[in-house]
Image (cartoon, rainbow, N blue to C red; front, top):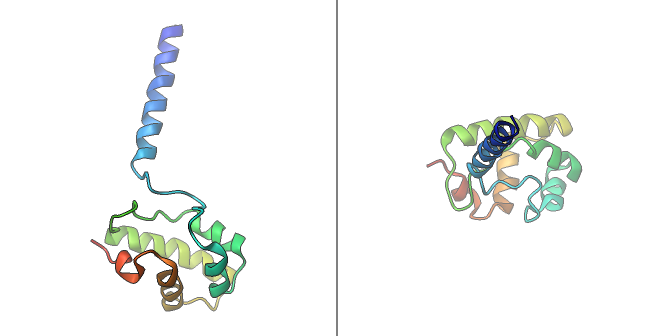
Length: 111
């Protein structure tokens, strides 16, 4: 019984590690993201931006996102940000995020 339980725990840990490794470049609350500047430009508080960005899944570093990922991320982020500041538009969000995204708008174009 003891060996079976340990094997199950190890299998679960291996599965969890594989799931995490599927998106290795995603860091919630990425310390390189200029949250203060982005939130200021959007007219919200930094903690509001961080809360809204928690469910966004950027493409792994150095890769282009799929069109599906771009649309899913935009739906999550824009809807949440508009609850914090209804004046935020799709174009306004794009302008601000492109300003601070490494590679600018080009880095966000779907593959």
